[in-house]
Length: 319
Image 1 (tube, rainbow, N blue to C red):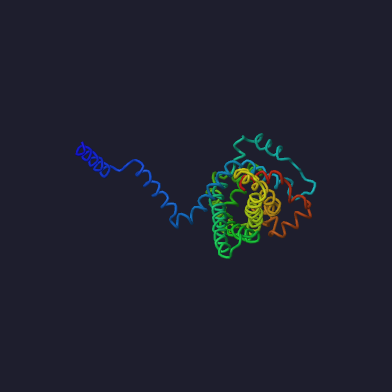
Image 2: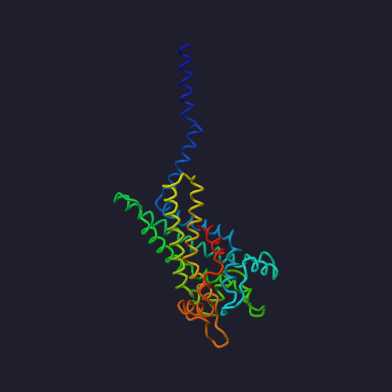
């Protein structure tokens, strides 16, 4: 009996050595995936990839809201007592003039903008915050609000310069429907818009409105990223909210501050990027400060905050 048992044990041992167990295979696969995700280049690129995918997903959802926002900003241009349509009226007019899918005009430009701009700004912000967190940990303290704000401002400014051509194409595509039919460019896609603008107006025209775009991005990121990070930390310290509720609440708070700080610059950016030379060969606005002054004088200061609610509804999902 003892000899038989020994032989059986030996046989089992040989089988075990010859055929790896299922749990061993699963463990090896998990280790391989874990090793891949912890590669330095993968860790460095993940914030950029995640940021771009998040931004493109949000844009797909809120593109109609962005379309309405742009039309509200361009309504009654140059007249203090001009039309003051509501978001509902603009939406109804767009659908009445064409079809519901017209609300998605410029989606290709919006997606390209997010692929470039949001990928860069969230990637830069996460990279800057990681560096600041490491330095703060070495000093035995937590990252402060001013450091979060600085990271947000820097990330927004750098990303805006890179993403300006796509932003310009988006505004041109969304405002094209406001022109008489014979004057419309009828861009087929963002590639078509970028190539035609570059050919007819010069390559530098793709960076028209870059200054207010950068300032707007810095203001938006200051409100969105810095306040989101700060609100999330404060809610975690002072409340018992679940992780998901904490994130959504912090997003709502950040969306408000991002909208408040950036809307005037977004308004001016839209006006500058939409403008084209008139019959006299001149542009309506010479630059950001001229646009600010002219709009304030001719249309009133409150015009800069027209469509605040629509803008907030657009910004909050991105936060």
